[in-house]
Image (cartoon, rainbow, N blue to C red; front, top):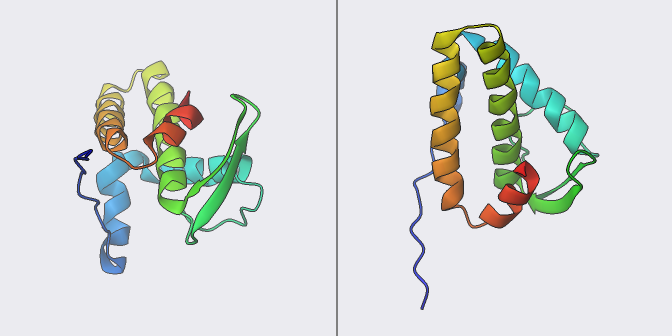
Length: 130
């Protein structure tokens, strides 16, 4: 028998969503949110805009950059897009010598990778982020 250690998932209530983005991304939250939307448009052929985590069962993601082409859960798609956005914002702040936001994005990146490790679709997430 195989035992899986799972991490609790943070469910952000509707009333907390406006304060969650600044908590997650600091003063850079608006650009980070736009980064997620831009990545969703690029990776999801059926994306029509307006959400950070797809509100459906399964999502087709495709990228010509790393040849990823799979259908994953909405949760996994949200993790993939968020991880990509974090990575891009981290690079932008590192390159512009913004140590506070660089540290924040390094922390968020580590936290998300810790979550990915125990996600049921971790192999698909790893492949997408490869």
